[in-house]
Structure formats: structure tokens, C-alpha cells
Image (cartoon, rainbow, N blue to C red):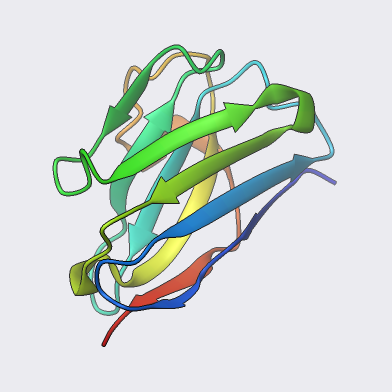
Length: 126
């Protein structure tokens, strides 16, 4: 059974940090790009970041650029999202996803992904 499982979410004050992890199982994801999306209550799911199969290329939404960093460890079949300087507007359920191909091209579109995790809640509040 192919699975992506996110962890590391929680509650944090504005300005704080969290590190999300997404562990894959059932197949290797080392040969595909991996993305992060988020969905706030009452809003559409939105793109956050994507990383190529090798980790050599990354792309971020403007809203998180300079604050979030995506990385991966292919030996562990795991991708990470380091989130710093968190803001209340970052509050959402965060999802990781495995792309259909190795590059970040098209990585901001949900249709580019064929496996999704169940999500992890991130709440930023004072």
C-alpha cells in the first residue's frame, strides 16, 4: 500500500518555527518531485513548495518565500518543510504530495500529483 504520512504539525505562536516531515512507504519516491500544499478553513487548497527528485531545484509560493525551506532525504524516502517566522495566515492543514514526474515543472498545480498524504494541522496563534 502506497502511503505518504505527514507529521510535525502543531500549535505555535507568531514568529515561531515548525518542521514538517512527510514519510513515504510502499514505493520509492526518490525519482519524483515532491510538493507541499495547504488548505485553510473555507479556502481552496493552495501550493506552498515543490522540490525536484534530486533536491537540486525548488520553488516556493510568494507568500512563504524566504521563510519556508523544503528539503528531502531520498535514503529515508522523506521530504521536509522547515517553516520559520510563522504568521497567523499560515494556519492550515498541510499536505505533502508525490508528483508524476521528476522535475518541478508544473509543480504548483494539484493535477501534477498522484499521491497525497492525509495532512497535518498547523495553527499559528498568540
